[in-house]
Length: 102
Image (cartoon, rainbow, N blue to C red; front, side, top):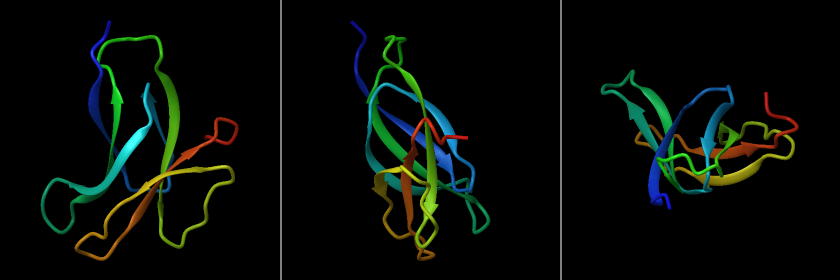
C-alpha cells in the first residue's frame, strides 16, 4: 500500500487556471515568492495529502488564484485564503468545476 504524505503544490499568481494532479484535497494555503528580491514572482502554495507513488486515485483538477475584489468564476470552490503579504496582498485559492475549467 502506498505511503500517504503531506505534499506541497504551488501556483503562480496570474489570471490563468492551473491543472494539478492530486489524490487529496487542499488543507492549507499560504503566500510565497519564487526567488528573492522585490521583483520575485508571487505564488500561492497549498498542501494536500497524497502519495508520491501511483495509486490510481489521482485526478487532474483545475485551480486558480483569485485576488481580493476580483470576479469569481461560476461554480468555483474556495479552498483557502493566504495571510496578508508584507505588501498587503491577499489571495484566495479556488478550484474550477470540470465543466468550466479552461
